[in-house]
Every structure is written in structure tokens, then in C-alpha cells.
Length: 467
Image 1 (cartoon, rainbow, N blue to C red):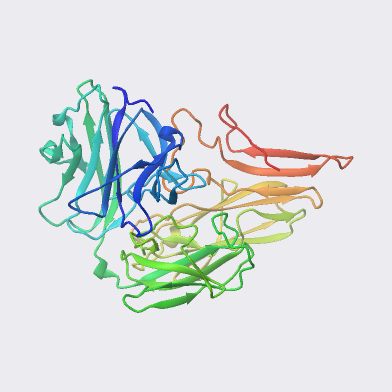
Image 2: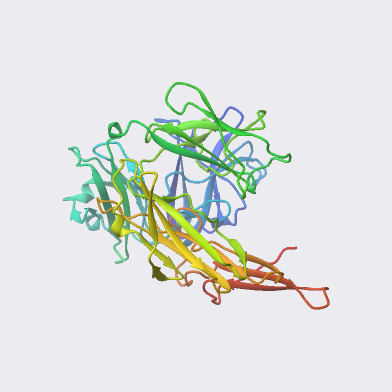
């Protein structure tokens, strides 16, 4: 990888306790084609903090932290870990994402979408720029809910390229949006925002947390049939508990709910068939002690749950009468649902749902008779009496004639993966979002015909077929 004057030095940071069987911690990524591990340096003042500066050209990169036993390419890697400080990640392997620009503001903390209990909350970030440019310290500006912090440049160290502001007084509880911006001497500018909730953990002593195991997950390496699933951990504090999960449902999902203290990390392990102990295959959050970590984040928003249909469900023509519903439930504070705010749509058009009290919220029922052929989208929305709106919820279904081949319906807007990943600049949204697949044999029965629909067909849409 060329380390030229146009590169931007990026300081990766990872908090990790090295296992006795590992030799070190590093970072690997697309910036060198995933060819090597870049070893990180353990900080002398805090051995749990590892850092490494890598000069990277401007553009989009994907990366992960690794532990290793040797530095022979990637062959010595023992574990791959998504960056816990970066809210942007996605793809089938939960790779962390970063758009390197000149200048760049990154690692802006508190992290986007988190609930913070430290009051006042420290505001920190890293600011970097190209080697052939320089930062204008006087340009650094910090906005807190739109109000500028006086003399924000005083909290930036140009040598370490780190920004740290610790407010002198406690803040009022609630939601905050923080924006940090900077400009170089060449006139290039950038800004990054984060929105978080400041919360008093004493307000809610415990709240329900749901553990989920997907028995069909490609990350689960278990060759035998799964008869029982449980999770072990100290969920309520110091007492060790075993929580049996119920399942599997029709999709191979096992579920279990336990009461947990809010915002307190809890190490846990998954137990399959009473004898197979392992980390959660679909949870990228690993503790410094190499265990899966569950954190009950306080939900300040109402939430849609308990849908009557599964995403991708297929119906034969004629469908007859079909009842479709979801349940909107209050947030963890129990704020009541505003019944008048509940909205349901069928293929984008508003319908008048039937509302039935359920679980402290409202079951929202949409009834349809003899739906037309094709893919259909049912969406739900609503808010509570405090004005907090739920995250959008949807069910995608398909209606087709019997014996018309294999039909697959994909979920709505699921091409972004986890986090708040966005398509790279210039690529239309939906270019990689498969919505529908149809497979049928030809008349002679010696070939399969594939019809694939995507949300947006663009020049960037590419399809690979593996059989």
C-alpha cells in the first residue's frame, strides 16, 4: 500500500484484553486487499487500549480488528472483531465501514444511537487530514443541539489529532445531537454528527432482553440436529443463571427473554444440546475476556413486535381471506401508545386497520380478501403519547398461482445490513436490494429459468450465480 503525501493517517483504536493464547491485536482491511495484519501497539498507560496509525488513500474502506498468534499474512488470525467504536458496519461479515476524506472526523463518541449513563457525557473524536495538507485549528467547531461550544479548538490536540471535551456540569436527561466540524488550510471541510440519549439508569431497575439463536445462520458451525438451546450468564447481577430458549419456530429461530439491568454489559455463552458451549454466532460484540456480550439498551421508542406473518411468506391464488397484524408496544418506561397515530399501509396506500388492545399496546390488524398476484408490502407506524415515533416496520409477502415454480420474496430495505451503512457516493440506493426471485423449469424440463427483480436496476447492479 502506497504511503504517499495524499494519504490520510487513520488511527485505529481497540479496547481489548489479550487472551493468553494470542500473541497480539491488529487491524486488517480492504485498504491493502485484506492481505496482511497491521499489528497494533498496546498502550503503556492502559494495557487494554491498542492503537495503530495506518496511512490510507481517500475513499471507502472496510476493516476488522483481529487477534493473532503469528503475522504470516492472515493465516495466524484467531478471531475477527467488528470495531465496537464505529457505528457503521454491514455486509455478510459485519465489516466496519469508514469513508476516508480530507479532512475526516471519526470515532465521534458517544456513539450514534447509544444510551449514555455518564453525566456529563465526555465528547471525544479523532480528526485527521492528508499528509500534504494541514488542519486549521481555529476552524474546529462543536455544536451541541445546534449551539456552538465556545473555543472548541482548545479541546483539540494537534499532535495526537484527538479531540476531548468533558463538560463541567451535568446535563439534563434527554436526546442530544452533537456535530463536530473542521477545515484544512487548503479549504477542504468535513463534519460528523452523532445522536444519543442521556439516561439515568436508576430510573429503570430492570427491563426485558430477548436472546435469539438462528439455527440456520451460516455463522453457526454445528453439524448435528439441535434439540435444546440455552444461554448462561449473570443476567440479574451476581447470580449465575441458565435461560432455556424456546423453539424452533418455522424459521428455525430459538428465543428467550430475561430481565436485565439497563446499560450493564453481561457476558454470556450459548449452550446447545446441553453439552456444546460457544459464543453467540451472530453477535459481533465480544468482551475483553473473549465472551459474547449482551447489553440491555433502554428503548425510548415504541416498538412493533409479534407479527402474524413472516417476511417472505408465500400465498397461493386465490388467497381468500387473509388477516395480517403486528403489535406496537410501549418503550421501557411504559409510555402509552397514541392510538390515533397508528398507521397501516398496503402497497403504499393507507388502509383502516382494526385496533385491539394487546400487551399494553395495540394489535393493528389489516384484513385482505383475494389479493392480486405479485409481491406485496405491509407497513406499520405509530408513536407514543410523548411523541416518540416507532422505527418503521414491514412485512413482505408474495401471491402466486399454484405450481408456478419456486418463488422467493425478500425483506424490504434490508440491503444495508446492520448499523447505518449507506451506499457509496454515486451508487443509487437499492442497486443491491433483491426484492423477488422466481425459478421455473422450461417446457422440456432440462433447464431452469431465473427471473430476478431488484429495487433499483442500475449500472452498478451485478449478479453472481453459484450452483
